[in-house]
Length: 343
Ligand SMILES: [Zn+2]
Ligand SMILES: [Zn+2]
Image (tube, rainbow, N blue to C red; front, side):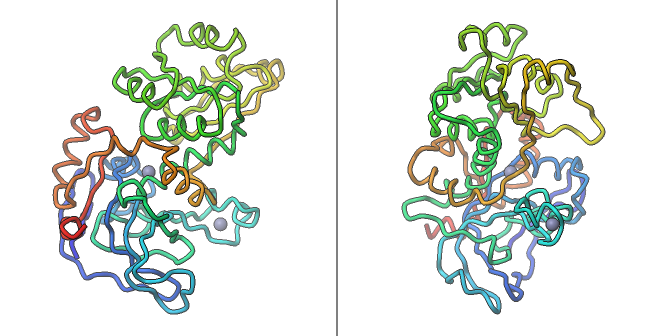
């Protein structure tokens, strides 16, 4: 099979490799679409501390279940599927309480084991979800980023009629906007880039610039109360620190964006009690894929339409280009050429 191998920072090559065999309990998936995510770019740039080179990245994967290993009963070969990339150990405290997304030994397909930037990959059978009829492979590959939006809205208990402020309108921010809107929330979205705000507006959010007037602008939109839920999807320390001012008294803050290890985020302590706010972390997703796929097939989540497809063979050029000019491609998908000819 053809595979895109990252052998070190900024070293990416297309290689011919033996097609993997599914071990007992695993499924071999023939890849039809794999999303390029910030996480993949971090591996490419040498910024992901968990990645060991060489690695095949790609954790937003849709394809066809090709073959099953011994003992697999929940997957029929020939079925269109998406691959949930997180594998918990099943025995640690978070795994025991149903939060395998924060397993202390979390394994991620496309980080710790080979991912979807190849013609084939293998995954444990419980990580395989059938694609609902009517959903294309490209759109289905968004199940993973949309699941992050589902998880964050569950964490923040986003409810109908409430104001929800989404900070950051990258791919995850856009997923958050649409999931929150589907829950009936009144969504305000902020970003520093006007091109991103334009997309947020198309998806039905009230789009506002994330400038030094953000707080008065938000108060103007929310009867002076602030947002019931503020969700950070920027990973920017200043933005995270501002959530305390932007949230309404009694409200919830959900932090989805990642800061680098060792970087502190400071909150004024008195506001915790004064506002009785709840600050929640939200990591990846757990048990969110079925809801995510339903949101995609029902048309409630439309932002995958902004994606651009590229041949798998073009990956080295595309990655170099995206790193050089991050605004150029809002969301890229890698599609194996052989497969595209037949679809
Ligand atoms: Zn991702
Ligand atoms: Zn665990």
